[in-house]
Amino acid sequence: MKRKPEIIIALDTSSSSRALDLVRTLKGVARLFKVGLELYTAAGPSILRDIRGLGAEVFLDLKLHDIPNTVARACREATRLGVAMIDLHLSGGAAMARRAVDEVEAVCTLNQIRRPVMLGITVLTSLGDESLPPLGIQRTAEEQVLALAAIGKEAGLDGVVASPRELAALRSRFGPDFLLVTPGIRPEGSPADDQIRTLTPREAAQAGADYLVIGRPVTGAEDPPAVAREIQRSLLL
Image (cartoon, rainbow, N blue to C red):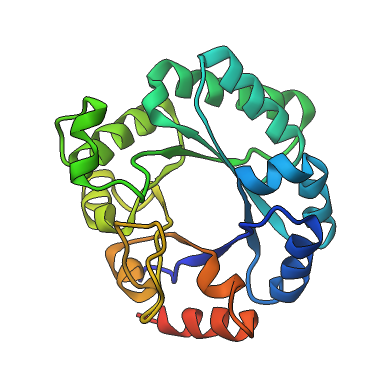
């Protein structure tokens, strides 16, 4: 029987104090907290240490995309900071992803430290089928997600970040051990905001998600722990 997916709380704020307050409030409900570009740019690497100091784990969501050497070295430094998850854009190509995996494994072996989960970004949840042709992509969003995921799996990544709409196809293609991390999760009645390809937490769980990334529906609520617990209850399959 498949386990219930784990919730990752997205700390989408530029305020270190706000982010740490959310971790203190929610760490009894969630283990993993996502630090993205906004918070990392505002607070720097120290926010990762502060979150870990509170007994929580960090998903460092910088969506790295550059030449292979640059991305590999950035992944190496993120690993040294003790994050539990890192991600990179698979549109950077197979060589970039493979180099990042090799660099992370080397630094972990050399320093006897935990290897973070390495994830590939496929197609952002703010993009739909109609968004891709102007980018020179003639596939549907699902076709592009599957093609990029194949690159990531071959390169040695542990899984991918993809919208809930592609979960069933990904699970069917890549099997039970390839991790599927899913943003674009919106509980019933929550606004979609800038997300296009969304599902409810329960729908995403039924489609095969391993992790659900949830931000504003929880962090913007009057009682974030209560909302997070209600989402967890909805995931019982």
